[in-house]
Image 1 (cartoon, rainbow, N blue to C red):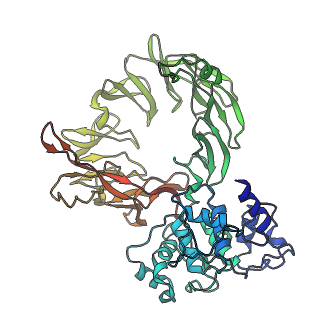
Image 2: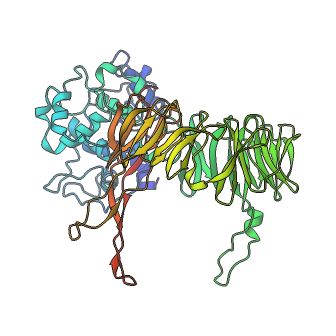
Image 3: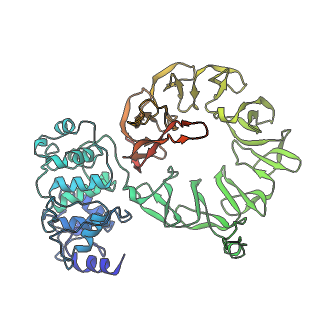
Length: 600
């Protein structure tokens, strides 16, 4: 935060909604104790997002100016980057106390101003504008027919100005709109009060429990936290890595950056610990350089260790490689050899192996100079395996073996049950006793004995999860049960970009994405052309196809992409063969965010 910005926040925001300094608890505000949004105000106060006046009041019925709301947006979304050169507003002097905030909000496209070139900084912000600004900042998605949707949602939808209809519909769909005392009355042109802005802010930040449901317009999905908080992987044990300023840290399920970004690499949590790394300064200092003076990558540039959920080092960074804990042990590498470490940092099985896999079902495959073996958690050899390729951990009593591009399976006794015969590119994973494989020019499923359990009738197939598996027939995906019966009819398909106007007959390949993912936490992520959503086990959309792309739920959260389009890539002229290459459909733009499971 620059000096000028810090100065005006600290010295001029007395009584505003946002305050960077000490806060009061809501129960100490003399005028909020029995209000409908008192818990919301309390939560925001505890988080340092709001403050009161020197006389101990919050004044929830006071209005908020457009300048004050610009300050609010910058404080709520501190990690949003600038997207454009800020506008020059004719009514905002450089000496005005809120000039920097207005410029910052304009540069991030929170505000656009009025058609006459003014910003109207002292004008109270109407509820419709506050809602629209937040919806645009979050890239929220509007329903296909916003007018009809608004008419169904609000008794006074006719009062919503045209410029705000799409944004209000998007915010309503995303569950952000709070109407007190009548949930069906939006009152779009009324000036927003401090209390109402606080309620909107609680919905943006995911503090849903602080407001009564009867005042919240029910949305069809819920943003978990603002996208600017980061995060790029699934959540595990309540945390997920985020990447900021070239380093990794961890978010919690509320989007709070609970472990600061400080690591070179960061893995998911398992069994209460996560493997993270820091620079190996000794190795980095001694790296050789090429003829241009650039450092040549060296081995062991990172030192790995393990942290707990508070970010404390449990196992100091001293390892050359570290994997996730499984069944109380983790594979680690020291000086070119693999061993196993326990959560106390004690070497349970000394580094001695050329290769080692994680423990699963009580055994781990390891490679020694004499070949592969299954060992128990004490390092005792249980089985010697006569195989020269790669062996993976046990899943459902079967361990995948791979030689070249051929895949087979062994049992926990090390006996080959399924000879390597399937291509690594056309084989899934054993799950719930079945394995999807490519057989006789089509996909089917085999059991643990290698017998065909579900006939090869599919263009493609995925693994079973929660009793169902995705399969592809006639270019569309559906779901079958473990008897091969179609439970959810094929209806999901990949997006295909629109053909270019100058060449409408060109061949366009669909996007190379996962159209139907296995069920997770009762829902399956599916794609319906240009949009994606989530279905239940009956095939009903629980979260409608509103997003550009979606991933599976994990730990109650799922990553989805807001906005963006499906564009074309390729189509270039190839002079060697005097033809134009085919087009491929690829995603373009959009923002990845986390949404909450509808039934937490």
